[in-house]
Length: 292
Image (cartoon, rainbow, N blue to C red):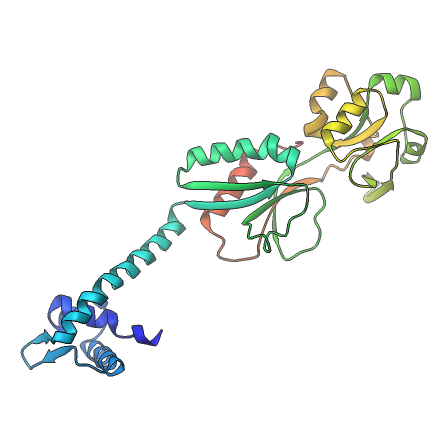
């Protein structure tokens, strides 16, 4: 902004009482200080300084201008320091989104720990299974699970996730164990929000279209249906790991499991990502364990 040119130089002269001290304070030449002050006087149309060969003093207009400009200049300086501090000390609001069940079980507790470590940080997290547009929604970060769609967002892998096809021992005893993907068509399938299940066959990904008597858009509801002996379901480990360990559910088709599925942090492509965002992403990567 052109009207700000020369303000810092004039205030430095007024504060120090001469051009030499102003030049030293601003690390420039006396000639440059003189030119900037003259340009300021010309732009506002009034003389601010009385100049003699021995001294410099403020005119009446200069005194008034200094009284008004100096506090404003200090405020601007403080604002710059505050912004610089944000780059050094993590503070401020972080807005993110995460899937509902996974976010509630794993992300929220880690966010609480993170905020205890960094008292200057506050968090607003939207738990949603919709893939929100983080740029449009003004979010800093998104936690996503599984295969990512192509986008301009930067993705950082936080952990590896395994997805299990499983059923209750009672269901297996009655209907048997499927040995191949083709045999899924002869089983009762408990279907989630996606009309297909993903597997690895050989070295390539394979999607199998699924349909069944039960269709729930909730992992917990699908787990409950499997425990009720209603069929096979495909769920991430954090839903069924304890049931598998206790024998309440049995894994099938383990040879077709995708071992490279992942949990991701996505954020806008920007070289100047705020330190608080990088710090949170690194914290999540450190504390989220594989096979969640």
